[in-house]
Image (cartoon, rainbow, N blue to C red):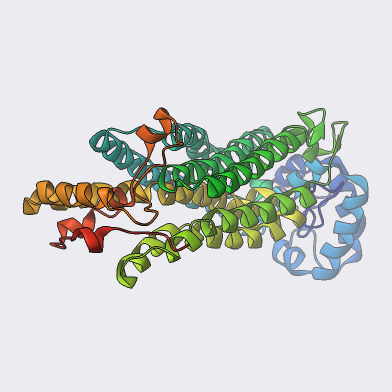
Length: 429
């Protein structure tokens, strides 16, 4: 975000003169800063507009351009915003307001993600197996709560309105809350990927593959730690991140625009890496193409998160160049919230599939038959099965291991009964 010393839009439309005598113009004078009144007193008499002809003054582009240049050189940021606010009101400029976009979208996707997590907890209770992926996802959900609440608080304080229509204290408060939300957002994104990778550890027992997963986790952890640290200390002092907009405080900041773009790009790369890692393993499974395709589709739904991340990049263009940031930051705010919560939903989908399969099995009364089929398939020998945890797993790893049948139970609920030969899913060497 950039806060230049002057706002180019601040004096776009200016009214009144210090020489006016009517009560209306005296009221106008009392609202304008002294610096703006001096500029108007200099240029309005040189124009073709009468002192009391507000319509003429509002429509005179040359006059407004001259006054704008004058105020930019003589007024502070807050004085420029005050001038813009008074001028917009007197000229009948419509007050723009899209605060509801932020609060409605934030609370909407937040409730949807919470529902997805609750359904995941139900599936865990039925499966009676809690793993590290569930622990980390719980932390992610807790991290997502503040940004969800912030969406309402930011809207109430004026995010979604033009900055000259927002009280100065609220502008500072918006930037402070935005700063806090960025850190929760970055931490949640990194941990969501780590949770998904931990889930892969419970599905695929191959030791070489597990080493790749651990390395991927290290990359995600490094991303989260480095960018959260960089965001917290983007300015010196830290408070300068939300006070520097008014030009009245002293401090320095990193190149925040570059930092935001690097964070977004690294996040997209890690998303693609995380989603792509299981696909080769799933492709080599010995099962029907229909089942294989369904599993690959489920594991690939995380690409939707990547799509959201790419859409968010467009908002960073305005983020980098904005002077009217309480209006322009709206897309960045709600796309960040959507990205975070959609990540939670996608990470919970395997548990939802298991839950759906369990419910269907109970409805058709085939739970016992499906369990027997799964038991037989796990005893099949001759090739390396993804259902079996290798002997070199420790006891804890075996207890947390999730067979793919646990993810694929919906097939049982659909009346598909596997034979030992057809239900053994092996990996090609």
